[in-house]
Length: 396
Image (cartoon, rainbow, N blue to C red):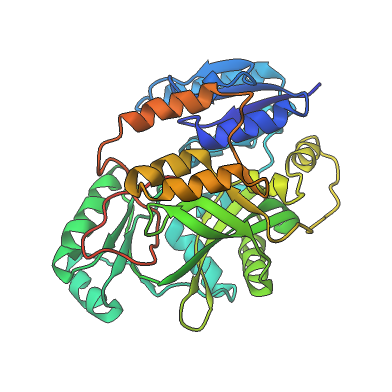
C-alpha cells in the first residue's frame, strides 16, 4: 500500500480531488495545509498535517522537511505555487525524491510569469502582446498602444491574485500600483498585457524532461468569474495546434511532473495564445479521469524511479463541471441554477461532487455562505468584460 503526501497551502479543491483519487487506489493519504482546509474534512484524508502560519516561512519549510524526512512517502503531490517556491532550494535532497520535479534552473524560471511567457514566445508559441514597464512613466504609452481593455498581470501569484483587467485608461495607474504593492515583498515586476477576446482552453498532463507522458485538454464552457476565469464547466477537445503549442512550452522548460497551461483562442482568426503555466496540480484535473486518462499511477511510477511509457490518448466530448465552481457561479447568476440542475441529472455530464465524501463540500458551502462581493480576484482573461475595473476572481 502506497503512502502519499499532498501539499496545498489552503487544501481545498485540488487537494480534495487528488486525495479521493489516491484513496480509491488504496493509498494512505496525508494532507498538509492551513488550519481549516476543506480537504481535512474528507473521509479519505488519513493524516491532517496543519501548516504553521504562513508569515513564518522558515517554520513552514522546517515543518515540511521534518514531515518528508520522517514520513517515508512513496509520492508527493504539489498543489500550490507558494509552497513550490519556498521548498525549491531543498528539493534536491534525497528526502524529496518522491516529488518529481524539473531541474533547479527551470524551477527558478517558472517562478516568473514574465520569463515563462518570453520563453514560450521564443519557442514559437503565440502569446498576447506583453510589455514590462520600467516605471509608471511608461504606462500611458503602453496602454495607448495596447488599447482597452488591457491586463495588468503580476510576475507571480496563482488563482488570479495579482491580475487586474482594466477597461479605462484612467484606471491603469491605480491597477498597476495595486499589483505592485502586492508584489513589493519580492520586488515583482508586473506586466501590461493585451486583452484577448476569445474562448479559454486548458491543457494538463504528466511530463518527464519536457516529454509528454499523459495529456488531457478541454475547452471552457463556463468560468468563474462568469466573464472569464477558471473552469466551472468544460468539455474535452483535441485541437492539434493547441496540443502542439502546449507541448512546446513544456519542452522548452524540460518540465518534469504534473503541470498545466492556459490558452485563449482568439474570436477573430482562431489563433491560440499562451497565457500562463501552473507548475502543479490544477483545479480541473478531475476531467482527465472521465476522459480515460490515469495521471496518478504513472506519476507514482515516475516518483519511484521507474520508466513510464507515453500514452497521449484521451476521449473527446467528455463534459465535466465542478460543484464548488457552480455554487459560486450561481451566486453571481442565479439563472444558472436551471442549467446546473439539468447537468446534475445528466449522466453524461460528470462532476467532482462525491456523495460518499460530503465533509469537504459542507466545509466549502460554509465558506460560500460567508462570501462578500469583491472578496475574490479574477483569472487572467475574460471574454465579455463589463465596463469597469475588475477586482474579483478565483482559482485557476
